[in-house]
Image 1 (cartoon, helix red, strand yellow):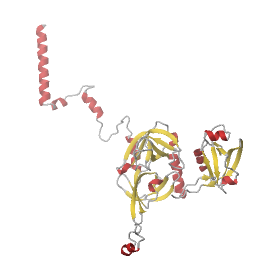
Image 2: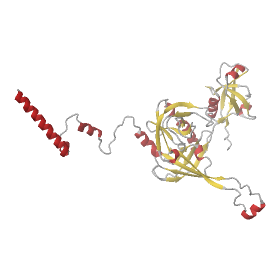
Image 3: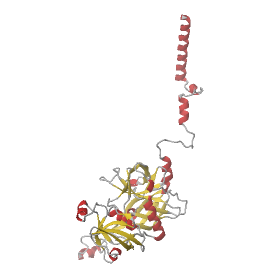
Image 4: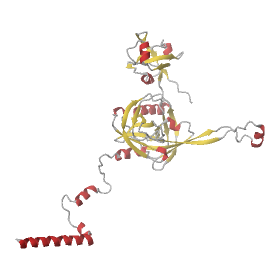
Amino acid sequence: MRRLWLVFAQTVTVCVAVLFVVKTLKPEWLTQLPSAGGGVAEVATVLQAPAGSEVHRPGSYAEAAKKAVPAVVHIFTSQEVKGPRHPFINDPIFRHFFGDRFGELTQRRSGLGSGVVVSPEGYILTNFHVIDGADEIEVAHNDGRKYKARVVGSDPESDLAVLRIPADHKLPVIAFGSSDTLRVGDVVLAIGNPFGVGQTVTSGIVSALGRSHLGINTFENFIQTDAAINPGNSGGALVDANGHLVGINTAIYSQSGGSMGIGFAIPVSLAKNVMEQIVKTGGVTRGWVGVEVQEITPELAESFKLAGTQGALIAGVMRGSPADKAGIRPGDVLIGVAGKQVKDAQVMLDLIAALEPGKTARFDLRRDGRALPVDITIGKRPRPPKE
């Protein structure tokens, strides 16, 4: 028995010594040996996919980005800006020697933003503030192609604009998603050209829906997201996990000028409606009745003997407007428009804007504590004056 044990121990020692020598001097010999099931070689084979094949990576949104990125473009703008007059321009001696060359200095100011190609015909959605005042607009694709763009139309009150570039090549087009089915917590990607560094994709979630009363636009119904949005992202795409367009990145809340995790995007449902009107008519038509309203505070509700703060207080009526012709007075409380409840002044503005000019709609008011239905012929909302 003792002899057998000595033979076994010597055999094991010799094998280990041989393995050590081979591994040190000729390691390639070991790679030619057949692998046993479940070994390291088998694991490496599973992780190394064949070239060109698709590999599912849990938690990756590469496919969504791959679909959307080609349709997001860079927008470069420039405009001529007149500078201040020279302080001595009115001096006769100064004018004698220098003439009017220093009378009014001009320079070119450049701007930067993003846009989304939404049609094979070359239509691009972006923000109005990206192209506002520009006399030259250049659109650049991520692959290096550049085009001169023209403005088809704009809507300052929603901060949207439509550009068009020549459709001489097959343009990549983004697929529209549904902003109405978004939920707080859904994953979204923001795509644009922040600070001009180049095409960038950031990720986050939908932080909130229906954000309004921010003082950014006249008509506000923003998607709030924590996906990083910075200067240059304006007009770019907010897409869902499938790479479908759900919003147009528009603004950020920031104390530093950079992303602080609070960004706002215009829902694609609103953007698509505005775009279709601009392409069809060159502008956006909204309903209007000519009233000035204010929010109902608890103090006002008590003063007007209202049950709550829902509704909008009529603070003023424009003379000759549809509201004036219908007999609406300051002090009336608007609680319903065309059968829909008015929760506050912003909701009232949106409901009236959605009405078709020339049509008649029922407005539900409260005057002196009594219900008062009024039929109003809707007018066309005038364009806001240029600042």
